[in-house]
Image (cartoon, rainbow, N blue to C red):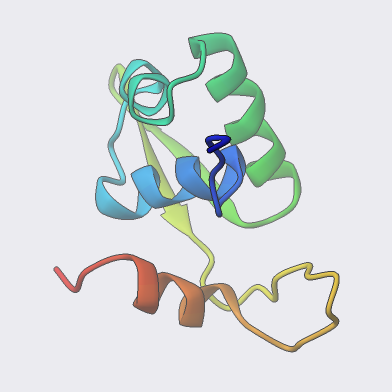
Length: 92
């Protein structure tokens, strides 16, 4: 059986941030099983697309997910980011 993932690395990185808004790039990279540089590019993509905001607090970044953003889906279904996160991230 060929290994695959239902979620992209962008989605997996977003889930890491949803679980811990103060997560380090090193931890995102380890969780998603990618390099730190790839994690940095993915987070930059998510910021540029408007899915997350980043604020510097001391030596750490703190991320805020903009749950009101629509998802870009090929099926053209109207699903919001908040709805997806409610399914994938256990309530805290």
